[in-house]
Image (cartoon, rainbow, N blue to C red; front, side):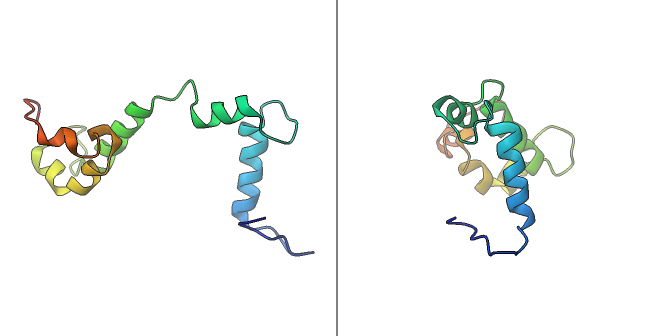
Amino acid sequence: ADMFANEEGGPEPDWVITEREQFSDFRDLNKDGKMDKEEIQHWILPQDYDHALAEARHLVYESDADKDQKLTKEEVLDNWNMFVGSQATNYGEDLTRNHDEL
């Protein structure tokens, strides 16, 4: 209700419909209409999701200008703000160390 107040007789926005589907299909695993501690844990820390790999793929996808799946020094520097804002680089701290691969 904080984000969407359903007006009587009014249609729901598409994003509300999508969120309802996400909840019923993926979040409410035991189908009781609410999320318990285990369901919240599964949502926040899914067992089959590698956060580091996902962040690394995101950085490469967004920064790889020539789409060769390799980052050059120039591509990293052109997107420095993305790297210093990333958990994968310890929010930029790891970029200050010498690396042979860079």
